Length: 173
Image (cartoon, rainbow, N blue to C red):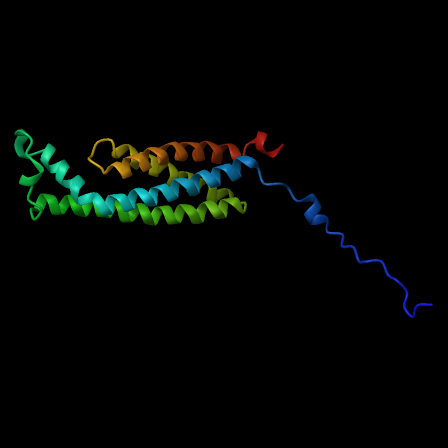
């Protein structure tokens, strides 16, 4: 005969976990698309920082002063005020892109945790990123930056559509 009586294991009745609403699939897709767009934005900015000087030379050579004929890349003065101001614009664009991409990753993660207002801010950042990528069509950029920008535009549009669809009536049912 045993000295102890066998007891059944304790069972916890956690009704909150059983009745918790599931996260909409569109929201998860939107967050992953936004994080991928932010990652590609950082890659694009790094490409701009690394090979921005060559792109600036091409920009100056193609658009010489006073509408005269284009000049060769060797004739571009890298110590001119024009070159230095374009370099400041390109680097400012690159560093601000990195900053806002990091903010987008944070906001996307917070939106995944259920923040409705955070979704709106993340969507605004994605839309502004896509609009900045359209600016890239009018200036000379390195090839890596152009490829990453095209992917950011596609992923950004997908994230925007999915963020707006994530809170809709169809997503809740």
